[in-house]
Image (cartoon, rainbow, N blue to C red):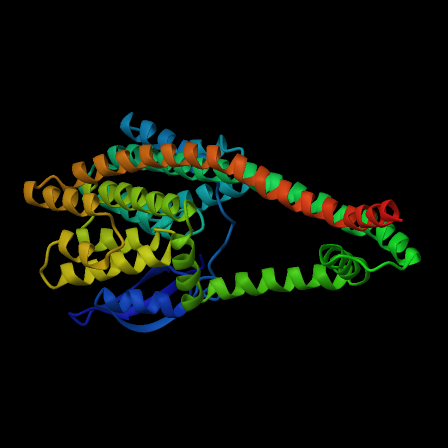
Length: 400
């Protein structure tokens, strides 16, 4: 997501400025207003002269964070830690980012401020947790929690991706095979039947029509697919488009349930990590919403945050959104009542991460026979459609 440099006035009339990550300028402005700021100016970081070194892989970020925490715990000065970490970083882009952070820290900036200049590498969650660690003098502990959070987040994402690889690969190969049959094999049968001049069955006419479209208008079909893909991606970049598409994903059978469990696990893990690190609950909910990965979940969290700002507890507004399962709401309520919200969120996150494991295993076992059935039906239809005229011709000859 792009980063925006903002300047605003708080409720006390004090001028403040900083960097915020959001999908659009309007969303960034809306987030600042929800935080009680009067926005005076907001522009993209690139327009403000910010440097962009590209994204950093979560794996590299997790390793960097864990090594950073060990060095801080050992008592090494902050600048020396960053210098060592930059020297041993194999990713040249990430190495430049670390050196830029080290340079800013050397010039007197806080680590939080230095990191916030590189939102593609360090998101709001990372920056705010580091800020809480600096303020509380527990930076090493916070970095350990961050590395654990990133590792679990990567593991959770990889599970979902691994569940999608097999069906996508099989479906892609099947589409190629069917296309080859339609373009190379069906025209041979079509020309043969045309020379005979017999009346063709409806399934055969359908197959020949599809074959003619693919053969004669192949590039138009490819262009149409490209245009639809680009249009879909551009529409997803809009707020309304992302809301509708994310809502559609959550309503899908089987896959929607899996995505909801992933979103709930991420919500609990993120908010639990932030609250246990000393980040204020309102700020933690705002960060959790922006890192949820789903607009429906994000809106639900922001509605709950608005209710909390009005003095209500967290569990009641979460229940009213009807997005989170009842168990999550009840566990959050128990955590609030006992003063152990972070621990309770951690337990719920672990439960739903296990649920994701089970759901992925179930999805894999279900997808294989389903794909075989669908592909078998398509290939079977083509074969039967192409041989039906031959069977009809043989029946006519047999009667004669």
